[in-house]
Image (cartoon, rainbow, N blue to C red; front, side, top):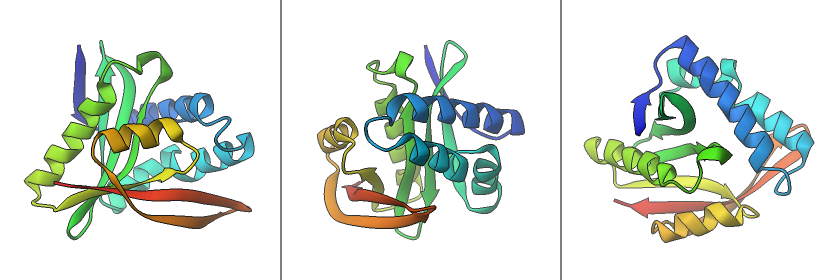
Length: 164
């Protein structure tokens, strides 16, 4: 059974940071370098960063549990007229079970309750699997952007949006 809850405690944030590290180190080799993975995990997925995102920056994290084990998560931020889907990841042992769709649907419901007009995200141009899934879920590419994230690394992403 898959359950979704909102991340609200320090222990949950700690568990989330550990899961993020595992997912990034198994999923992103071949898309970005090991050095960039380590840098991005530390910069965007570490316990201090996730804690700050929740407590100070207005992010909400939905945690996905399979049989009481954390296997996925989705991070969103309510912006003026749309929801930013910052993160949506599933552990490799739990992929293919529809969990990403359940987390995405939770984010869509969250946006609808806030009367937002759309959900948008950024996705690495080389992340073919995720791009395919987002297109299947009716997201459209609305822009592309290259972002200097420091330490000599550039994120080369598509911006995708789903009108709700």
